Length: 68
Image (cartoon, rainbow, N blue to C red; front, side, top):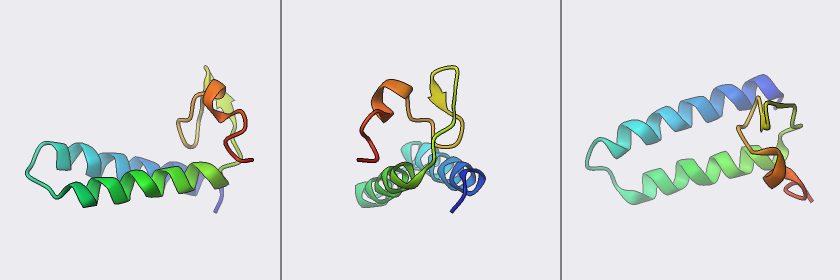
């Protein structure tokens, strides 16, 4: 999965999370989406811009050792 695909998937998951937070939704659905975002971040080849990865939104300080 390349950076752009990760960006698109995380954006889609975040949109679902924002929508779910505005409705009565099972916590499991939100947890699953957030878990998927973490998995995507673990395979992302980070490219930082203004302190955050432009693909997965991870802060540069948090990313150190994230993929280890």
